[in-house]
Length: 167
Image 1 (spheres, rainbow, N blue to C red):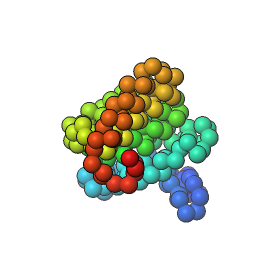
Image 2: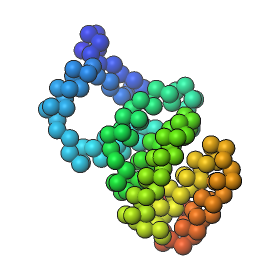
Image 3: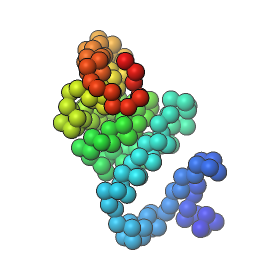
C-alpha cells in the first residue's frame, strides 16, 4: 500500500505514525465506529507524541499542527479528566505561536477543569500555570503575573493529587 501512495509512515521504527489516503480513512471510519474509549486513546496517544514539543525545532513541530488543530476542533474541552492531554496539544500551539487559538483553548480548558475539579485541585492549578505561561510567551508580562499568583494560590492549598508538583 505504501508503493501505491495510500499509506505513508512518519517517525522512527519504534514510533511510527501512519497517514492514510482519505478514501481509506473514510472506509476505516465506517468500519470502526468511534467510542468514548477509542477517542480517549486517540487523544492521549497524540498528546503523548507532542508532549515534549519544546525539544524539537519550530519546523519539526510544524508538521503536527494540522493534526492538533483537527483534534481540537473534533473534541470539546468538557472532558476535564483529559486536561493534561488537552494541555499537551495546546502547548504545541503555544510553542508554534498560534497564540489566539491557544488562548481560547486554555480558557475553555480552565472553565472545564474548574467545573469538574473545583478551584482547589492540582490540575486546575496546572492549567492556571499554563495560562500564565501563555501570557508570558505572548510577551504580555503584566497579564501573566495575576495568573502566576492564582496558580500559586491554588497549588499551595490543594491536596496532593500525584507527584507532578512538589510543594
